[in-house]
Image (spheres, rainbow, N blue to C red):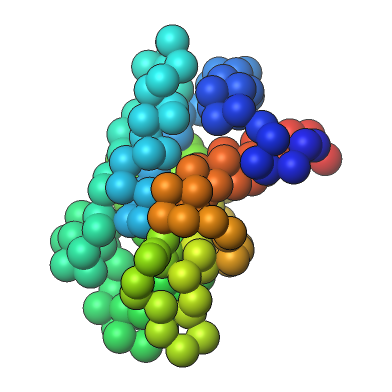
Length: 171
């Protein structure tokens, strides 16, 4: 597939949407650093109501706990910007929305401030959760993205959509 920056978000969103339609699935998202851009990418595509169920913007730790069930212990031990939190955010979408089959989450440091030791500006953790039989499978990926705040947020949306597509493609 093309380099992330070379792929149009609308194209990625439409492609993911078609894969979801083909499987009879719906998607939801939980966002921190992208602040609604991922949900906007889904709803930018005509017909997205066939597969996009809902989005949560949980910018604060309290919102992550209250709306998505992220464990306060996870936040204390690993921080908001961690793969553990990203996975709990994605799983929380599935808990909150019984009709959702696939959930995507983003949590990171878009900058220009906010960096801490071991967590530089541009670090974004992505969570993915999907229903599997009677349970839920989760996975996470961390990327260090280049550019200013807007570029990091846009690249986060692209990467999230692109990864979700790869999860749904036949192996």
